[in-house]
Image (cartoon, rainbow, N blue to C red; front, side, top):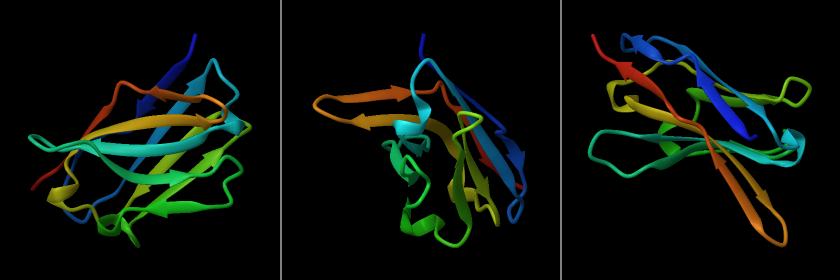
Amino acid sequence: QVQLVESGGGLVQPGGSLRLSCAASGFIFSTYLMSWYRQAPGKERELVARIRSLGSSTDYTDSVKGRFTISRDNAKNTVYLQMNNLKPEDTGVYYCNAEYRGILTTVYWGQGTQVTVSS
C-alpha cells in the first residue's frame, strides 16, 4: 500500500520558518522524482520544488528561490522542504508528490498539510 504522509505544517508569522517532511512507503522511493506542490485558496495547485531520485538536481519556482530548500534522505524514504523567511503568499496546502517516469508514468500524492503565514 502506497503512502505519502506529510507533516510539519502549521501557523507561523511572516519571516518565520517551517520544515515539512513527507514519509513515503509502499514503493521504491529512491527511484522516484519527489516534489512539493502547494495550493492557495482559490488558486490552482502549483509546483514549488522538486528533487531528482539521487538528489543531485533540484528545481524551484521563482517565488521561493533562495528561501526554500528541498532535500531527500533515501535511507529514510523521506523528502523535506525547509522553508525560511516565509511570506503570507506562501500560505496554502502543501502536497508531497512522487513520480516515476518509465514506459508508464506513475504518480502518487499525499493528503496535504496546511501552512498558514500570518501575523
